Length: 328
Image 1 (cartoon, helix red, strand yellow):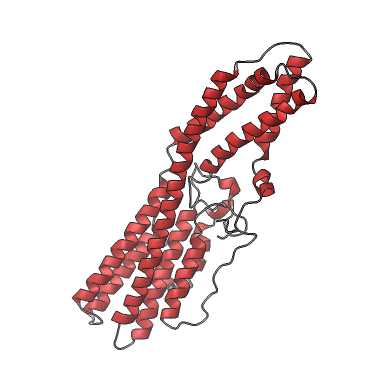
Image 2 (tube, rainbow, N blue to C red):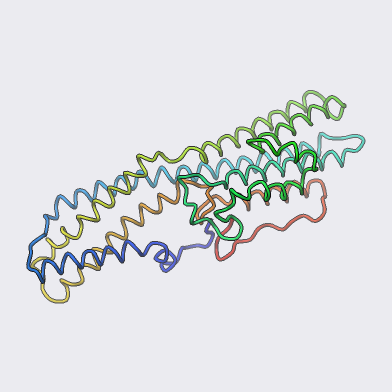
């Protein structure tokens, strides 16, 4: 997630300049054919303008829908933050008696392991995502290949080797970690560390964690409907293909330098439409590991700090910091 006040114009142009460049060159070729070859290939501007309005409305619909997916993902992880803090407070308050500090640490660490597994699972690639544009260093395109090795190393910070080995064949490790947490809470209840009422409070939190996990997986595993996404691209291409011929109709009677400035204007219009389409396209998948994602690594680290401070743990990591304006 980009966290500075503004994307600079140069940054925006850096990842979106190609439509402007190709659009200007394409329009220039149309104008050269008209002026040098003296072949009238202009089209009436009015119908092309109507197409442009329709495309703009469609892109607005797509961008709104894409933003809704990103904002829903952020709300889901906001819920994970709140429920995790509630879980940590409940662990510290409810687990009392012999060996309480060790048990509190075990439950807190298992919850952090669940966050870690869920975070890694949400970063796995899907065919419809922008795999080639993943953030470098932390989430390389080959994260799927190294998934087990990397995740095992991270989980080893919070779980014992036996529990990690039990998860090796699990299709969804986050789900099984939370199942182990629920099973352990039942064992503690049976041992008398807390009574039925407090155990039910724990169970309600487990349910909320599963709900938030399921909501995250729904966004991750169900793409923005491809008919809407693909149609936006093709409609934009159709409009931008016809645009130079309509611009030519407007500038046909203009002479001098102004006539040859028209390709730059057309390129600018083409750039605006493709920029709107691309912004919507990169907002569809808020967990894919690119520059405008929900910063689930930062959120997970913040939760870990809060929970470990509740049990007065040692060697607590520092919050993640933005690099070049980007927060992971």
